Image (cartoon, rainbow, N blue to C red; front, side, top):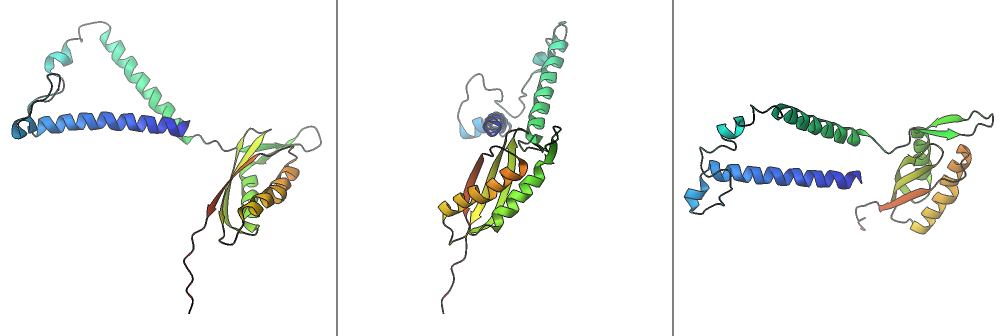
Length: 198
């Protein structure tokens, strides 16, 4: 959802900037007179000396009591929305800690990065895998793994996925004391140069 929202916001911002930039360019370069075409009557820039807001437009609401509170409230909403968007970019979906049953009733917290490191190294050690990256998401009591791995040219995807489930993920479930550890694996081929035969 965050990616879709980012794309929508960037597309709308780009569209607004494009329209404003084209209107300034058409008016500033006086393209209407040079290329002999007319713009709609509502177009803000018709010549190089035109401005977006006239002096009357800029000052006509200053005498009203509601003007400055509305301006400050609108700017405040824009600042809060920009801060919310910035913080949303910094927030990750990674699980920082994982709750493990230690048997004493208290439980223990295991760092998510440690589990990711073990998953990555064990996946890379598996036959047919050249590189791997693992990320842990979900909640402390119900984690989920996302693994991206690069397959060697001689690897069989079915065997790699089966081995990943029975060896790597099963060992991670057992060592963390989890009933289940759902995982999403993305397989990518590793590109190799063609070998020359003499």
